[in-house]
Length: 331
Ligand code: NDP
Image (cartoon, rainbow, N blue to C red; front, side):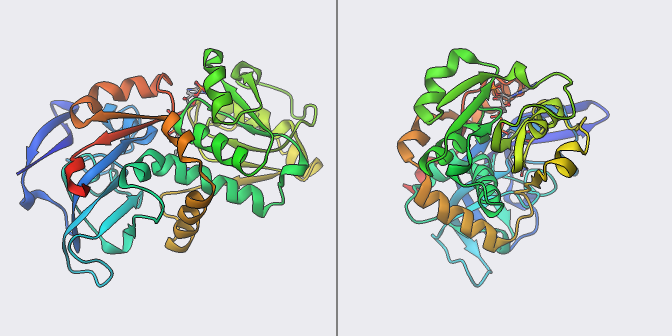
């Protein structure tokens, strides 16, 4: 038996509970992992609360991220005791995830815990941080270098936003952070923001084009915010779009793309091929200041997750939430 969160959807309604599960209930997979840490991501909060149809198979153990030790393996790349990391691949959506003491997974989804990070740090980064890195790589590939001008980060108080700020700062960019929580200005500056602006500047319907302001942007908010950001990117700039905290809609015009050559780079972390993941984690190991990571990380236990999920959807969590599932697993 092991403890885990379980989401059920039946005639009695949609609900999540912390419960005892049996090994025989675990899904198919060639590697069984004892989970040390997981995380609470925005997507997990949607799944746990049922606010969006994230979960597509029931019952489901949520948790799109996990780190832990291999307990048994039939996969050539992994042996008992190896420390492994998982982000995405539909885990926590269609395959049981990390918010439980055990997970059975496909070895093809796993990567070794990257050198330079403790298991806990990999979860402090989690899908949010790995996505922020993918977004930064997208800006770089499109020629957004620090000398080109300011880079805007929206949803700055959240997980993707916070790590994006720290990464951009470390690479020498001038970073403007957009937040609905101006009271967090000192925190955002401590992460590396050079300027902090009110997200209200972007959140309402705007014009097709505005003053050219940003060399690039990392947006985790979507909706009017993404449209207004695109409308104010400088000629030839790039926006990396990775989230929908304001909404999934994109009420924009083509003007920024056809008149200013703006690139909208879509970022998906879930089904990203392994070589891209390894590159992103290598870059995180070289570019992320772990002191800044500590600043934006909070830890909760498995027993706190259900109560915390609605707070995350209200946009009231600062930075990243690590879930200590069973830290003794990785020592
Ligand atoms: P968080 O909840 O940690 O952060 C989201 C932030 O967005 C909030 O902290 C808040 O920042 C801002 N925000 C919330 N509500 C609104 C609103 N109504 N209007 C404008 N801003 C708002 O989530 P994450 O950082 O973990 O994830 C952010 C988004 O990115 C989510 O939509 C998530 O699903 C997506 N995502 C996508 C991935 C991918 O593969 N594409 C991977 C990871 C995440 P503030 O208070 O500073 O304004």
